[in-house]
Image (tube, rainbow, N blue to C red; front, side, top):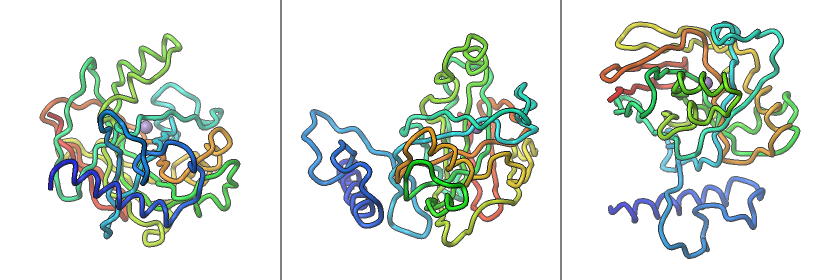
Length: 268
Ligand code: MN
């Protein structure tokens, strides 16, 4: 199948999913990939994440990330976890790097950094949106969960932070969001506890429990929805535990969350 055929097949599959399963928040807007798209002078790929056990793909609208959501990580980043309300940043949708379970995907060491860090995170994917979503019903908005990496050019993030400038260059660069397939929430149940770990070259670097999150996934959705209207296709990286650290070319990162398949990348 040619690249164009593949893309158009994905687009039709996704359009059917969207039409069948979700609401109308984007009706009338220029959403990518729907039937009747405007004629364009060139093609721009849409972003999808595979759905485990299905031939459908999850269409990604926005990537939200929560900062400093584990107390020990907050302290290692120089913050006081007892006083800080949750804060969020975004990565561009095309920062997604899909990683198939059972494979070790090549992940290119990015330009400009000399301190490239891993952050293992639980990712929640939404099939329903809204504003001011109450925490006690927020999980009804979750379609599925995946294991992801919030890769970070730490030196650039810190330098920009020191100058009170945006984190973009440290967090929102190309391929900065490796992710495994989404697993249906109806099959996995909520991820409120369970081991989360990351190894580099077989050595444990991060090792914590999801119950140590300061803001649960439900609370993150609720807080986010006060600041932004959430929509189907939004995904949320839920923060990383302590002991983030650097990798160099040749390193292999393996990560794990209880109840999800592992995720592995090799830095090249
Ligand atoms: Mn993170």
